[in-house]
Image (cartoon, rainbow, N blue to C red; front, side):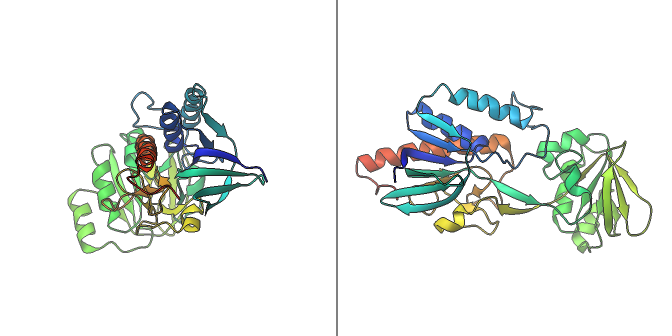
Amino acid sequence: MEIDTYDVVVVGGGPAGLQAALTLGRMHHRALVLDSGRYRNDPTGHLHNFLTHDGRPPAELRALARADLAAYETVTVRPAEAVSIAPEAGGFVVDLADGSHVATSRVLLATGLRDALPDVPGLAELFGSVVAHCPYCHGHEFAGTHVALIGSGPHVSRLAMLMQPIAARLTVLADGGALDEETAALLDREGVAIRPDPVVGVCRSAAGARVSFASGPDEEVGGIFVTTALTQSAPFAEQLGLDLLPSGCVEVDAFGRTSLSGVYAAGDLAHTSAVPMPIASVLNAAAAGLVAATAVDADRVLALVGAVPAAG
């Protein structure tokens, strides 16, 4: 069976993967980007907090990135989904959903995460617009409005303090949960309202969203923040036996190296043990892609001069 071979296979066509490919292309690596066409920020119409790209649709940013990559003849972007990755013969073989296979010396994972929303009817339909999880990405868009924060864990106090300078009014929707005494005292001291009633649904309204409860009146809000549960969007960390962190993300060093030689990870699927969770930011993902690509290049050079073992 004939298999195409590349220096590096980048799995994932979001900001981390595309930036990694750009860096690899500039260093004349023969690199393949496998793009499944699914992205964590698919639900949102605009990305924010990215210098010169603030407010740009994510699909437009990816199109611009692919246009940049077209100038580098050693880089191929392929609209294909990887389904498995396995070490083989000093490198790796990547199996694709279309039944084909590619071989590579090194793999750079940029497959991202999935967000699991709280089980509240209507949240999923509004996620990425009126419902968000990152104040740095979407907080400004709710400026001057009544903002709701769903949840009862200690995280709601942090969210409230982040949004306090932005929102006209804040309400924590405990959704039937119990706030701990410290959190409740802080919210009370800072003038943040608390609705303890279970939330039974949200829907779009003229103000932004209408929140309905098991008892009591509805709340009209301009925006809603939730905390999502994070899961890997692809099975490759498990397949390759990579070390994971308590967050469920792949553990990497400061340069994006994983616990398996020859495998690198960039973007929000991975972070170092120095931080408790990944930074959900398009700009940070792109920066991580650049750094991981430089690690690929550095390890290639070190392997050539005998300073480190070969990949795989």
